[in-house]
Amino acid sequence: MAELDEIKGCDVDSHEKCHSFTVSIIECDRFGWKQANLFGQAGFRVIAVNTNPHNLGMIEKKQKTEATKKNGMDLSSSSNIREATGKSQIIVITIQSSIEKKRPDYSTIERVCQEVGMGLKRKSLILFMSTTGPGVVEGRLREKIEKASGLIAGEDFGLAYSTPCLHTSLHPKEPSRTPRVVAAINSTSLKVAAIIIERISQSPPIKVRNIKTAEVINLVSVAKNEADLAFVNELAWVCEKLGVDFIEVTAAVDKDRTPSIPFPNFAGSSWKGFYHLSEESENAGSELRLLKHIKKANDEAVYRVLRVLRDTLKTCKKTLRRSKISILGVSGQPDMKIFPHEKTSEVIELLRKKVRTINVYDPYFSQIELNKLGYNAEKFWKAVEGTDCILIFTRHSRFRRLNLKRIKLLARRPPAIVDFARVIDQGLAEKHGFIYYGVGRGIVAP
Image 1: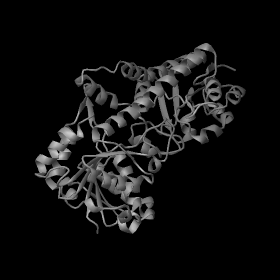
Image 2: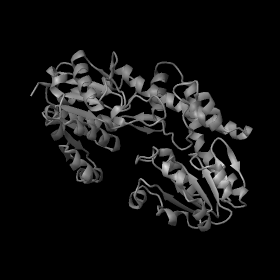
Image 3: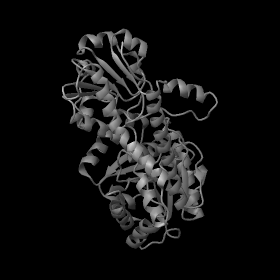
Image 4: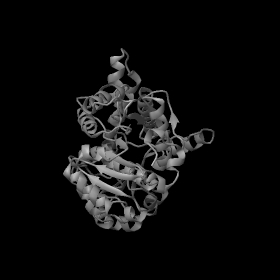
């Protein structure tokens, strides 16, 4: 086996060669599990580490799934960070910082870094995939590791940072094909980290001069998404007020524009990176005035969902308080099983306080899975039975083929459709007697 600091691309160019190296994913959560799968599929031996017994149980359950067996991944689990670190040449820290009182709280990551340091051995590489403020990895986190291990970053062990992914638009991409930025404390760490990242992402990474730059790139790339999201949400709202169809407008604009204008999403924003940027910019004597407005606009979008629902039901001569709402689609991406956005859950929790009954259905989640997420889930026809309004959040393709004729027979009349995904044909909805709201178009009554 090649020493990690002497590794070359040819040392990991096959599944068999990668199996010589062990990777620990520290405090493996949902994002960490994705990374564990990428490393496992590439051939690395993987230890998924989580100190929370409940989360560890979920990881062990996933290990037994047919997909894991089929892919032939060498994946084990552990609750001991020090022990797993000591067995690994590559230590990947994916845990994200929390936000407390609108300030990033790094105490949990610092605790993890201390545990990693206690088990760290020479020639290892620590690779951060966390969202951190500029300078945090090379500052306070590096200091924690060095103090606990007695080793020096860049001399005794490698230290690198890779963005979770480089977001270029709001459109979904295959996570294994998404380009990543990589940076490190020195040239040796950078070389090793770049080779590893290229192996798991199947595309050459973008190398930048230092870790602080990579941290900013991660935050700025997501900030751009937030700016795009705020813009299209506001544009869709204005189009409704003007009696203009947002989809028609953007389709015409997109003919001469690349990339295309993203689709509105009133329940898709949960950007915490703003607080990382905000804190460091204030420390540098600057202020992110525009980003503050963007953050506020996207936070307020949740209440726009409530207003639209109330206005649509009013057109049906119904009230929120006495209505049953059937929510279709909570997945974070169309036609995929992706954990729901934080804002989606926030919208549903807000509606739960305002309406009589809420039922949730998503074809990519089982009823049990949705119930565990805190949603009152039902099978499809049970979810729409007696409904006053169908509220569609996710653009799943199969929702385009809904049997509106049968749904109308089961619903309380006059039924309504609030289509934030624009998957329902307006003419067909009108034909079957639905009051229809389409995002960027407004309310249309038959």
